[in-house]
Length: 246
Image (cartoon, rainbow, N blue to C red; front, side, top):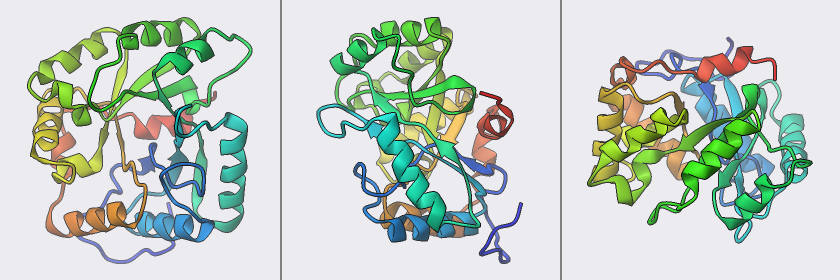
């Protein structure tokens, strides 16, 4: 597909094509603050080879009490300003906590999901949610496909990354942040990312871009290194989102 800032590049993300996790929608969480900021990041990510973008702002009641309706409004405001970039759609990154448990008990409130009813979930970085396995089961019962966001970033798995493998046994997919490969979040996060990649456990990859610094680090990292070989053992599903009917 066409990239509006297409130019000769060495290492790109064209092999990934689809970014399925970011906080680029303006003004609704800890990501971009303005439409102008959002468009700037999207243009730069497009120049790196990505051509389709799905947005997943936080739904975390205690900090970012977003709703699918509010996220949709932010998406529409960005869509109007970001032509000709391909904005694939929007979903959310749900914090699995007590509020999420209550949400799951309400059958009349559909979740903000990616195509194919894929739902992105996250936990606190410092303590595993006691109900995460139940949450995964409940999502599956309701017809959703859960995806655990950035498992390499949870500090309680750093000494025992094998514990992450049980999520695959539960039928939960795993999403890795690209910046973890470059060591942006720290050496332990990079080590766990490598563990998961070497075992072919990663299903989705996202930029998790929030702001200029994240994209700047991607730009710098890709100038130095081709990261595609890191993913050779993984059957990445990013592009499959383009073909999902629901």
